[in-house]
Length: 71
Image (tube, rainbow, N blue to C red; front, side, top):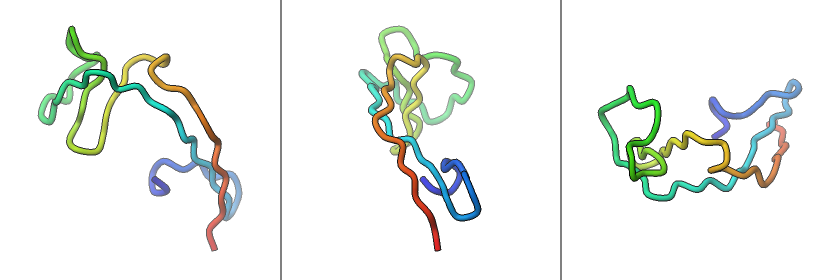
C-alpha cells in the first residue's frame, strides 16, 4: 500500500489510513470500467481479485491512522 496510497508528511514520514469497509454483496466486474454505481441488488463492485469499489461513504469506517518512516 505504500506505493501510490501513502500520504507523505515529511522527508521520510508517511501516513496510511486503515479502514473497515463493508463490501456486502459484490458485483464481479473485470471488464466494464464505466460503472458509476453498483448495479441494483449489489453493494459494491469487485474489480479483479484484490480490489473492491464502494460508492457510498457510509460503507467505510476509518479505524486507525498509521504513521511510519522509511530509512
